[in-house]
Image (cartoon, rainbow, N blue to C red):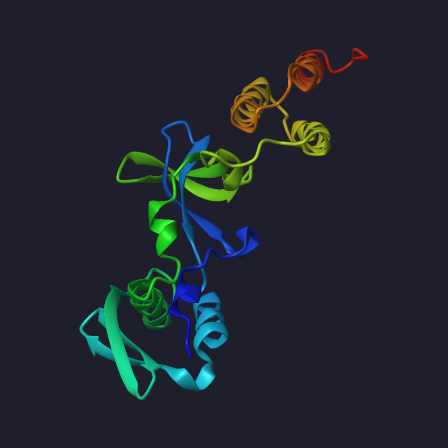
Amino acid sequence: MIVLEGLTAEFPREAISWRAQSVTKDGTKAMALAYIDARDVMDRLDTVCGPINWQDRYEFHGARTICYLSIRIGDEWITKADGAGDSDVEAEKGAISDALKRAAVKWGVGRYLYALETPWVPCEAYETEYQGKKKWNWKRWTADPWSFVKGAPRASSAQQKQGLADIDTDLLDCNSIAEVDKCAKIWAAIMDRDGWSPDFRDIAKPKFAKRREAITNPEKKVA
């Protein structure tokens, strides 16, 4: 017997990916949206239903792809459907994957992700210009989005120590005062959201001052 409640179970956190929906005007943060891969959906269906007890079928209506996801319950096939438009990358393939994931949500797979908070997370971005208008484009996350989700565990001492090492690494790539200021702003947000202790904050703060001094007076040895 298929226990359908298993379809709604949460996925391991490492299985969740995050995409940027929009970037702030200064390019330091982006809104993070959680999602799962289509292969994770297939694995969940295999695990809960068994490979022979589910099937998918697709119809194409212009740019719209409809997925009919059926699960065999007893001797009857039950079908639920949903659709998606072409994605930006490999349009048809992306639409098929998105349609499968949306149809799976009808069965409860990953539905909880829609209720998950969409936090603003520090990121690296690059600027482009089109028709005289400048825009920041997301490049990569510079912090774990899970750290900014309400109710997520706060950073441990080991994680804060690693954070100090990461600050040193990030500062090595800062070659101007503006870059150091941007780095400091990003890490201030990380420390606030991760609940860094005052002791670790006190260790972190001078690192930015020393890097500013090193850039301003390159010939002066900074202790």
